[in-house]
Amino acid sequence: MAEVLVYVDHVDGAVRKPTLELLTLARRIGEPVALALGNGAADTAAVLAEHGAIKVLTAEAPEFADYLVVPKVDALQAAYEAISPAAVLVPSSAEGKEIAARLAVRIQSGLITDAVDLEAAGEGVVASQSAFAASYTTKSRVTTGTPVITVKPNSAAVEAAPAAGAVEALAVSFSAQATGTKVTGRTPRESTGRPELTEAAIVVSGGRGVNGADNFHVIESLADSLGAAVGASRAAVDAGWYPHSNQVGQTGKSVSPQLYIASGISGAIQHRAGMQTSKTIVAINKDAEAPIFDLVDYGVVGDLFDVVPQLTEEVNTRKG
Image (cartoon, rainbow, N blue to C red; front, side, top):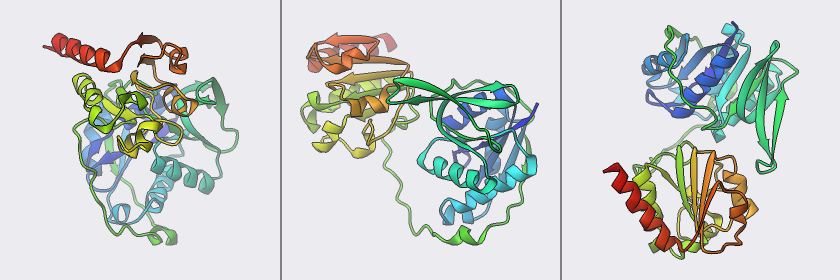
């Protein structure tokens, strides 16, 4: 089988879930070869091998941390030239999409972003994407060069598939542009102990119906009982009730969890564009005519301040 190059998203050797999903998808179209860069790159090998990587290419250099994006593109291009893969897969984060786009330009290949599924078709790869706020699913194929594809988080279930995972050091020659933009400082984001919003399997969101920042503890309590991330509608964010980093929607983050619970959210198209690909959607709203109910798998017409605490209590009881 042809090899598929997978770009590894990790933090000091801790592999993030979207990369493991990429390995699952990569096995459908070939044999995964993983590329891990920066501090702790070699420490990723065991987890990557457990999830199907036949080979792990690693490179550790200060340029990956000290400068923005281009050193990583240089390394990805070096890996591409070393193995001549059938496709290149990159997590669909903001940085991932920039890396993928720069690589596609360099190797004169087509680019597909925000894929939600991959399949082998003949000698090529067909990618599925959600379009027009998930009203349509499109299928696309790159016709020029090697497909470079970014894949949205939660597009595939993580599946273990032990493989050799042989570690090989990758020689990288950095381009003149690699040191053009220097990182002058970093501020760690304060941890809430909850999953990353775009990667979470469950998301609980609150909207205008929460009626104040002080009331968001109701949403947070349900999220914590489920081990979920907390989201917010644009109305809640604009009102200053919750940080913009938690906004779900067209001008916020797109999520695609296994379960999405919308509380006090009317369901404007702007919000729907960011969560409509969720596998199961539950809405709680006291307005029976709210547009969100046209979208959901399960709907509860009621006051969220009555329904959500009861739901939280029931979840905690079953867990106990």
